[in-house]
Amino acid sequence: MAGQTPPPVPEGYHSVNPWIIPKGASGLIKFLEHVFSAVETKEARIPDRDGLLIHSEVRIGDSVIMIFDSKEDWPQTPSFLQVYVEDAESVLTRARNAGAEVVTELSDFMFGEKIARFFDPWGNLWWVHQRAEEVDQAAESARVEQEMESFDSEATDYVYDTLMRAMRDLRSRSR
Image: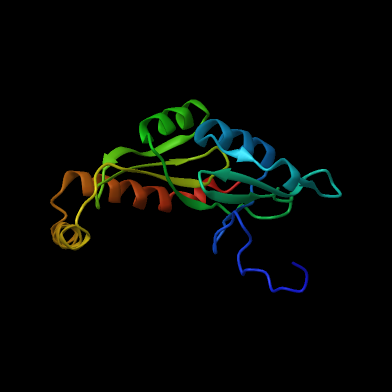
């Protein structure tokens, strides 16, 4: 109805919606369609004066990711994204087959989840989470705190170490 104040967040969006700004946005969109079954919102695709994308959107599950092309003289700005999926092993396999570099193989994680991580070919780091079981948050927080103090869990060490290595290696990934 005209004259009414619209809701603060448009329908279909969340309060926070990430941007990914790669060199080669159309390729990233195809990668996301293949790996995460993303769906591009075709009417949101806007080319810039130079033919590159100035705006596009894909939907993964219930979330919107906005994507546009980085210009030639812009620095690489990798994104870091967490995605909940139903079948993390299948997502990881599709990502690997599409050129992703796996950072963390699928591992048991905290709070009843499994986690994997990969760099896509554009240098973005994806955290792939799969909920394996419902857990008591207070009990799990206490267990995780104890584990972090001692670092005696092989799984925790692996998940932690692979992240530390990936983040240190970001400088060498700049294109």
